[in-house]
Length: 198
Image (tube, rainbow, N blue to C red; front, side, top):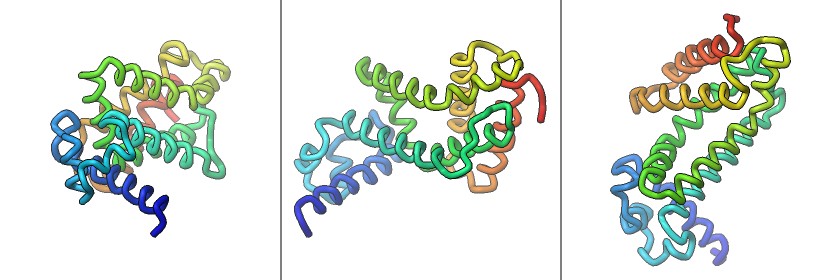
């Protein structure tokens, strides 16, 4: 195996191990040696790929964002939140991402509690994620429907609601639960943004 391929394999193994250990112990209780042990790698190998535990977490955030972008770029993407199917599509993506990246999302919140620098990084990350779909909410105002607040604030409330709801669900919710959560959240968010049912 070439050096470049081996390095990529080690980096991927460290990321997978970090997510497992974060899920078991939490971000704050995880040491770098816990991650390397879980990955079956030498402790020193970590620093060939990441400068710190925060840098690893930032890499996991970037992977999550890239996956979100890929899902949102699927053919037939809907971007007008006056359409309940557009809201459902985006809620379903968030529910799926939360299921797959819950440990990373919890780690992001924990890291922000103890590091002002990471809190600023997280704030920029979340603002960027919201900016990607701000135009979807703006469509509601442009259609003459009164949003509960400015488009930016309305979108933030929707994000926060969905995230809080998913965070408090059972950790091993199954696919049927995801479908039910998507439907309930879609109805709630659509009604909140549009001021009416669909």
